[in-house]
Length: 256
Ligand SMILES: Cc1cc2nc3c(=O)[nH]c(=O)nc-3n(C[C@H](O)[C@H](O)[C@H](O)COP(=O)(O)O)c2cc1C
Image (cartoon, rainbow, N blue to C red):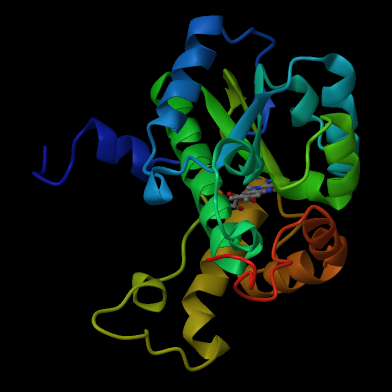
């Protein structure tokens, strides 16, 4: 085995989202371990500004699947965890002089990052235990309805559901962009234009032709343009402001 290869690296390198699950329950101790691994993620300033809601109720699962535009794996997954960026708990627990600070962009960024890190670890933990899974951000089509369904207080942003279970089928890995476009040394990568993606476009097109039996051969560019145009979800911004995120105008003048 190469020195840079071990079980953990192999697991990380073999990631592929799984959307097809066996009808086999996820035992309580497995779910609990996944949640504990999420909890042991790094967290900005030790704040732990996120909340994980395990969705067991069938009606709630059905509603979430519908919010996500009919993504059936939300209902079929053995385990579904809703990850929320959460500043409510801090608001309740802490006596912060400048109350405005919780409503600034910095703490919004902290909460979203914390939730993202925790959810990423949850999926890795699940995969290490033989499960597969997929993030479902499509639920943000109906962010307001999600908040109602789970009776979320203000300053809680339901970001996505991570659906996990024992895999019936795991698709082959989706090819990634050339490392030189994603990572660089001591400065921003050299990004010039779509011509740099020629090889990648071919690889993505081939990948999808293969998994759709020749039905869809669109490349990464067309897929990404479609993905960000079809559901711009401006309502997420409205929800965030209504829920109290990023409403601070500056330091609270009343504070010391
Ligand atoms: C925040 C987030 C939201 C996502 N939302 C969805 C979704 O709603 N439905 C879905 O099928 N996949 C969703 N995905 C999975 C991505 O489509 C997938 O990770 C990406 O295409 C790369 O494929 P891979 O994970 O198999 O490597 C989401 C992934 C992330 C990180």
